Length: 122
Ligand code: TYC
Image (cartoon, rainbow, N blue to C red):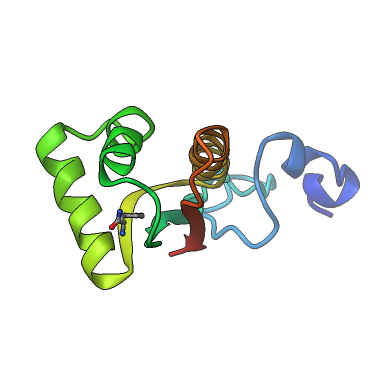
């Protein structure tokens, strides 16, 4: 019987998942899987939506401050949203995307603008 069967906590403790494929052949009578669980995180697009009321300047500032865009890039994204209805601000892991959406909505509500910002799994 393999060590991982007699000690079912062993593989999870090493960060190894059941379905990981072994990169090394078992040596001797020890059979453990050696590939660490390094799954890539899902990524999320953060999108700004157009409306008729939020001032262009405010959207540019949001893009500069929340999404670290340079003025020229921020202006380009804002105009893209204004013309097409939606624009990509960036792609982030779940918690960072969630935080940026919350920051945009919080700033917009504080300034009493109806600006909408959403996240979408890639
Ligand atoms: N359409 C807005 C205006 O004409 C500008 C705007 C751009 C609003 C981008 C929202 O996400 C937005 N004032």
